[in-house]
Length: 625
Ligand SMILES: Nc1ncnc2c1ncn2[C@@H]1O[C@H](COP(=O)(O)OP(=O)(O)OP(=O)(O)O)[C@@H](O)[C@H]1O
Image: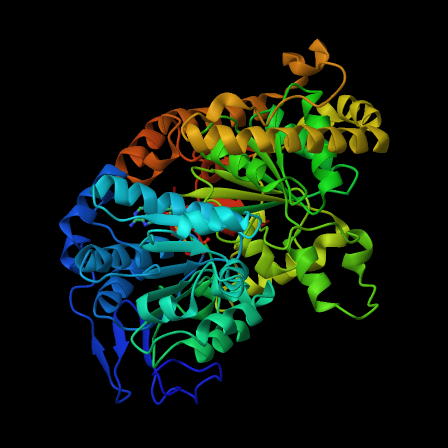
C-alpha cells in the first residue's frame, strides 16, 4: 500500500489466511477448523437482503425460496463486506450472487456522500457481457423503484459519449477493463475521484479477463483501489489466471468453491444437461443436423455451435433450402447487431441460432502468439479476424435454450463444458447433442475423461443419442447431399458478405433506433433468408412415406414433451412439469430407444451407450427432467 492507503500494483504476499467455503455445508475458519453453516436451505429473504430486492425477484419469476447454492453462501458474506472469490459452475446464478448484495449496499448508501465517480465498477471481458449485466441491473433497479443509475461503457464509444454517460456520476459502471483504462488515460475518469468514490469492484468471468489480454488495464485500475474497496471475483472455473487476479486485487478473501456433491469434477459438470453424441463423418454432418431439426427430434430453442464463420453460413444456407430459418452470430458482425441478435433470440423471436464459437481459435492464437506452431487445430480453422472483446460462449445467458448442438466439436473439453452450459441454467434442464467425426474422437475422449466418474466406469456421462435411426438419416440422404452441392464456396462467401453488409447498415439504424425504443425488438430480422432462391416446396416438407414409424414415434414424443412445457422451458423446473411429462409419455430421451421404440414396455432397464443401466438407477450425474 502507498502512503494514501491505496492498494499497490504488486501482488501482495500470499494472504495470511484464506477462508475457504468448500461447499454449502462447510466453512473453513481462520484456524483451519470447520463449522457447519446453519440452515443451508435459507430463502432469499433469510439471507438479509432488502425486501425491495426480494419483491423484484418474485416479479422476475425467480422463486424467492430457492437461492442457488452459490447465492446462499456468497450473499451473506458480501453483505458483511468480505472480499469473495466465487467459483461455481456455469449457469449456477453467479450474477445475482453478486448483484443482489451490491444493490442492497448501494440502496443503503444512496445519497449519503457526494461522489465524483461511480461507487461500483463491474468489469466483464466482452461487450455482450456488459450488455447482459447492464440489463439485469437495470431491470432490478426499475423493479425496486430506487434512484440508482447504472451505465455501460464500451471501448468503441466516442469519448464525448463516455464523458456524458459518466457525468452525474452514475452509481454503477459496467464496462471492460480496457474501456476503464481508456477512460482513465483520457481523463474521462479522474484517478482521484475513483480512489475517493469506489466502494465495490466486481470482476466477472474473472478467468477470462487475463486471457483476453486485460492484465495491464487491470493493473492501471488496481493502483487506484482504496483499501476499503470490497473486491469480488466471479469465475466458472479455477485457473492460474484466477489465482493471479486474486493475488493482484483481493485482500484475504473468502474463497467459495461449490463442488456440490462429490468432488472436483462436479465443480464443472452442468448437471442439468443430458449429454448425447452422434458419430458422423464430416460430410454426413449436414444430413444428421437436417434429420435432427426437420424430423423434430430435438426441442427448441436450439443453439448450434460451429468453429468457423464460413461453416456457420454454409449451415444457414443449407437449412434455408429446407425451409428452416436461423440467425448467425459471429465476431465479424458489428457489436450493435450482435447484441440485437442476442436480444431477439432471448425474446423468442426465432428458434435456431448458429453461433460461430471462435473463442478456442482465439485461445489457440494467443497461446501460439509469436510462434509459427502449426497445430492440427489451426490448420483446420485458420486465423480469422476476431473482435478482441467478443465472446459467444462464456458467460452469455441465452434464455430458455433447450438444446445445444455441437455441429463442430470444440477444441477442448473445457470449451465443451462452457458450450453445453448455455442450456440447463440455474434450475432448468436441457440437452446437448454433439456430432462427432472420426477426427474429433480424441476431444470426445477428453470430454469423457474430464466428466467421467472414475468410480462408476459403467455409466457414460455422454451417451449415444437415442432418437435418431439409421433409416431416418438414410431417408434424407439423397435430398441433403443434392442440396449440399448447391451450397458452394462462392455462395457461402456471397452470403457472408451480404449478411455483413446488411448488418453494418442495420447497426447504425439499431444504434439510434434502440436508444429511443429499447423494447422495439422486432424491427430488424436477423434470421432472414440469404439464399438467392426461395426453398423448393418439395424440400420444405418431408413426405410422410420417407419417415419410418420409429422416427414418427420419437418425434411425437419430443413434441409431447414440449407441449407439456407449454412452450415455456422455465416451467421445466417444477413438479407440475414432471407430472405432465408422465401423462404425455415421459421424457423421450429416457423412455425411448431408436432401435426398439419405447423402452417403458421393456423390463429390466434401458440401454445407454451399449451398456445396460437400471432405469431406476440412472447415472447420478444426469438429473431427471
Ligand atoms: N435462484 C435462482 N432461481 C432460478 N433461476 C435463477 C436463480 N438465480 C439465477 N437464475 C437464472 O439462472 C440463469 C443463469 O444465471 P447466471 O447467468 O448468473 O449464471 P452464471 O453462474 O453467471 O453462469 P456463467 O458462468 O455461464 O456466466 C439466469 O437466467 C438467471 O436469471
